[in-house]
Image (cartoon, rainbow, N blue to C red; front, top):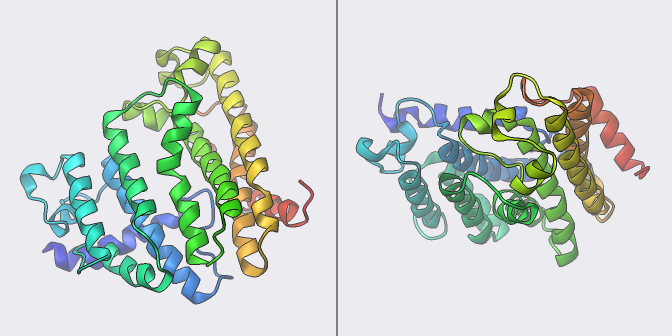
Length: 298
């Protein structure tokens, strides 16, 4: 089967991953035009992460669609370069990959700029070159590329971007990224990546070998609890974003914050032992958190 023939299945397989995210991507209560555009943005973000993580569908169809030869299809940096070239066609040409062709009408309709998309690609390039972060500030700088562009794109798609909302959105998105890192400590270590700041690991007397254990010891649990509190504080800092908008967008943004808070509660319920696998919240907990946020209780 040719890559072109496989394209619809590749596109659907990527978009279907939205159901497993910590936050609602394009829930049913949003206007259809918003749902379509948010899913187009999600498709881009999910695919670039899959390229960076080496999680593309087997067979190399994505690489062929991007015009990358089989000889370099396993070279993630080469794939990211090809993906960036195809992204630039979204803003002036005809992109090759179906997910970027899906994105092009959204870009034109919403007046989106290349910068947030380029930030997400840059984050995945960084993942190929940087496997450890010395300080929390270093990690925040990474989140500026890997997470914050997503929130900025949501605000742009919904026509609600202001400098104040962008600042609050950045806090929420950075928090969600930190929470995901906490859930995926074991998985990331399998890729030889550690997103727990080295200075914090030293503070809590955690060695890299401790992260490879089947279950977390007291030091690892204390470290995870510390980073979870940082994420919780960032979510609280960004939560006023929800009250700054109205209608169905308010529900969506409440879902983002609730997703982060529910995930932190799931980590706490696991007694901060994230090594056996990612603790994930159930839908009831997510809805409960969203209700609390919408009532303005905290």
